[in-house]
Length: 164
Image 1 (tube, helix red, strand yellow):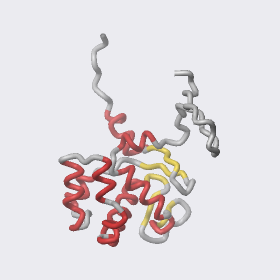
Image 2 (tube, rainbow, N blue to C red):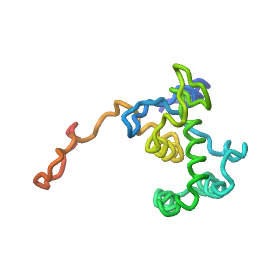
Image 3 (tube, one colour):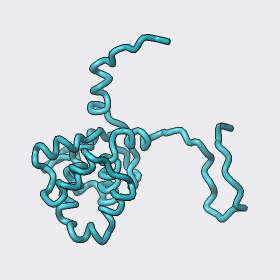
């Protein structure tokens, strides 16, 4: 058994500084980094209506079913403005490249309006589930199974591509 070594500081910073390449639903690829939701609470960047929800996510944990129920379409309509504000705030913090700026994006940046609502919702969903979710959406990820054709097929089970 080998003796444990202290993780180098640059490794601790790597996800925040380098992020992960993620293909968004639009087909665009962005470099996204982890988002520290607790910092948003401390800075007051979470809308008042959603602060208890974010606090519950951070400190009590919440299942995927609860998250889906909390952001179900009928509930999102009740708090649409504040929800969109939160989603935009999380997207701005998540995007490493291209960087999202508030005005005059120039050549190397974009405005939040340049990111489709579907892409923003996707980034919000991934960011609020943590950095491990970002890793699972990296571009070029190896597939475990062969893709199925777009037809009904014969109902047989798919075999793993690697023969596992």
